[in-house]
Length: 315
Image 1 (cartoon, rainbow, N blue to C red):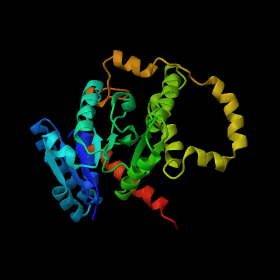
Image 2 (cartoon, rainbow, N blue to C red):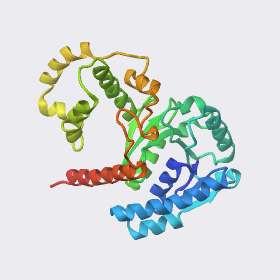
Image 3 (spheres, rainbow, N blue to C red):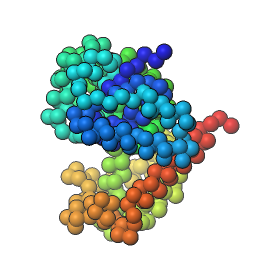
Image 4 (cartoon, rainbow, N blue to C red):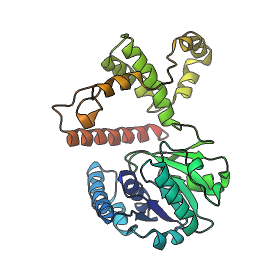
């Protein structure tokens, strides 16, 4: 019998997606939200998500039934919190709200309950002043949680390795790929590396050295292709560290070292080009149906992950 009884605090996009992950594998998870309409929307969205994933061939009929059987909905935190042994906080990125939530949970939950936050930006270890900080960590899922395998697990200054292993084990049991970061650093792994790349891309474009389309073409048809089966360190092993290190001595000194933010992003914001939500960003989306575009994007992610799994299988 499964020992986990999970509380997901916040029934927004990430909260309901995380609920799908655990429920599909027969783990009880309760979605808590203070707004009943948000819980109703979550229930409807989970049903729609499962129908879509069934069309894509990545969910079984049994897993669909499990999301109906093992997801519970609750608007009374005091009622559910004492019954759970793992909490994942997923409210929006507001420090005061997060602090209030953790203050309540610390009083309501059992002493051995493990506390996780799905934050992508907040230093939860400074925000959450809980009685047992050795049981506090970040578990950063990626959207859509049911599809994306990676979960970044971030340790705080007092987080115990034993509790990290426990959480990583349960994540692995539901098909996730945990990556552990041993201390809080802004951006964790993925967003931090994305920002490194974005800074250099913005620099090259604003200097007039290349175009957005050519940069993306270059990435998609070299690193983007290779990264589906090997990371950059594995690539350096293949090329030879003597060669890559020699190249780095010349390149590093010419790289952008801006610290004030993305210079390309600042220009686009001034022009009101915020991305797909304004139908204009680095590219124009005036003639594109946004929902259709997003569905196509999700389909591509799923299709790519299927290919990656075949590459990971031993031949």
